[in-house]
Amino acid sequence: MSDFKQLHVSALMGANWEAPDWQQLETTRKGEWLLEAHSMTERLQACCATLDVEVLGLHQCDMETLTSSERELLGHEGCLVREVVLSGDNMPWLCARTLVPMSTLTEKEEDIAQLGAVPLGQRVFTQANARRDAIEVATVIVKGQALLARRSRLWVNNKPMLVSELFLPHAPIYQEEG
Ligand code: VNL
Image (cartoon, rainbow, N blue to C red; front, side):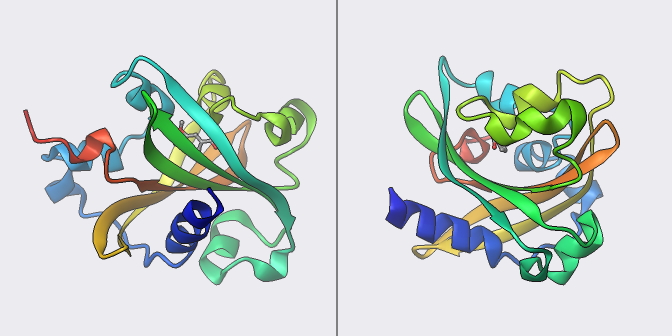
């Protein structure tokens, strides 16, 4: 699994994030996935019988290691880094890396550091004031294959976190338009 992590997490970290072309994307199936403003967990769950989360990594990073765009989106702060792979019916669908600033992990949000196999979306979107903004998209080449990715900021109780998601080859986003 650690080769998998190395390959996909570094691909996410090296992505060239760009503002989405909303008008063009909104009309496509891929675009609906990439621009999903509500819970990606729920959207994935609707496509399978069992959605499993495996935690690949959980560590802290200093604010010096954040990129300039990460600092612009989150502020100048150390973060908890959570890396997971989500599988739908035992097929790997999504690799996600989330940066959670230390000031977000306070009060009712302290438990976000200990989610384990509970999907982040399940935790965040039960909160009435959860919202997503700053959606960006990228195409990332992994082993010669072009994969879709997105990055977005989630807010819980007005505290931010930054989620990067890489859609793996078997993910429903690539299934034919029906
Ligand atoms: C997580 C991150 C889950 C991003 C997600 O969907 C996601 C997580 C289920 O860290 O649990 O899109």
